[in-house]
Amino acid sequence: MTLIDGKAVSAQIKQEIAAEVEQIVAAGGKRPHLAAILVGHDGGSETYVANKVKACEACGFKSSLIRYEADITEDELLAKVEELNQDADVDGFIVQLPLPKHISEQKVIEAIDYRKDVDGFHPINVGRLVIGLPCYVSATPNGIIELLRRYNIKTSGKKCVVLGRSNIVGKPMATLMMQKANPGDATVTVCHSHSKDLKKECQEADIIIAAIGKPNFVTADMVKEGAVVIDVGTTRIPDATKKSGFRLNGDVKFDEVAPKCSFITPVPGGVGPMTIVSLMKNTLLAGKKAIYQ
Image 1 (tube, rainbow, N blue to C red):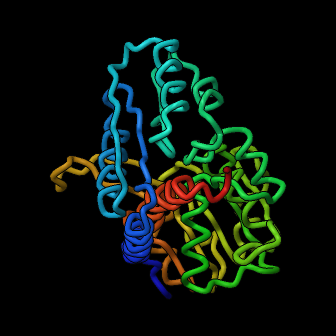
Image 2 (spheres, rainbow, N blue to C red):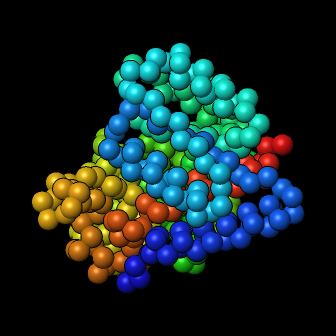
Image 3 (tube, helix red, strand yellow):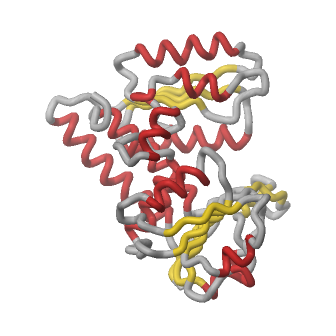
């Protein structure tokens, strides 16, 4: 069993990005600039955004954090999005989700200029992904593909089961795994809460990507010997022994599943660090105008 170390891979990629940024700046080019809008004080969002700002520093990017209280109106937020769309110094920006209930997330996503949509959520980027055109790929699936690539995990012709069908992970992940690419070329099944024989589907899978949001959902009896298991789950479980008062728990019952696997990601330290570094890769592409002129 090989433990996939997302922390180590992400650190390596940050170094690669930083070296490229220094070359760009030394040649008289522009330092990439990522902006993030954070609405309200959601604990998870605060942590993610703080980590994104730190990652920008490590990569040599310029970063801006724009904060609003939870009572900001939808119109005010949309006006700020339009301002960032027009700001030539900002190469890419994100609006951290979830947003307060009175704001339509879809409306906000669609208001972002797709050429600056480094989260890869805009319908144009999603559509381009589906037909295999260059685009900003949403960060978590992109990070998983990078882990598969760097660990030389064979995917061509393999049976891959994706647990979960969210727009952020499940759907784009399934799309990437079936593309004519390496990693890719897999036979993909997407399972969700209404799937029949979900256990049987998993038992036949060479690769399981669990993004269902249910702690310890995947158990040893669902996994065949030698399978590759990628755990996207990050549920906060109360834990009095931790300084934060909680621990992160994956969708996979790690201790009992790991011995059966050829490769497995831990939680934390697996997919999580790759999500942020994928956003950095998209920002570098945006800064270079590598996808959209």
